Image 1 (cartoon, rainbow, N blue to C red):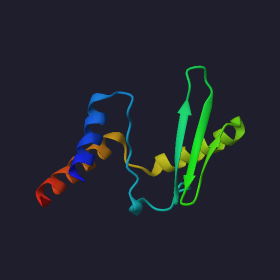
Image 2: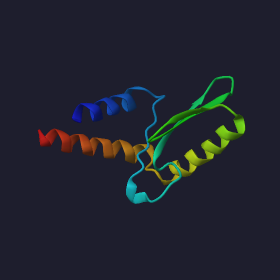
Image 3: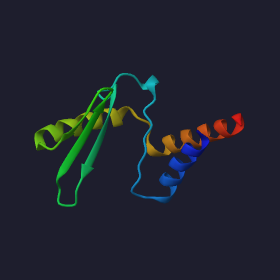
Length: 101
């Protein structure tokens, strides 16, 4: 697990295009529980989404549907730690994983 956390930290610290926010369970219910959502924005302004649940995954291309998913992501992100606090949490977990071995 330490190697995975190290990789995430490396990506955050060396790639300005990588933004990570941790959403702890203790921050309560949010609309993305039970699955994952990936959003892709192209340079021409087009947006796409991929929604994955425990049993399936689906690509979303219809602009109105994508915008609804963007709103859900915004709600979830509003409950998440900011980037700095998320980075601090990853560093804390890395120390814990390294001390376990």
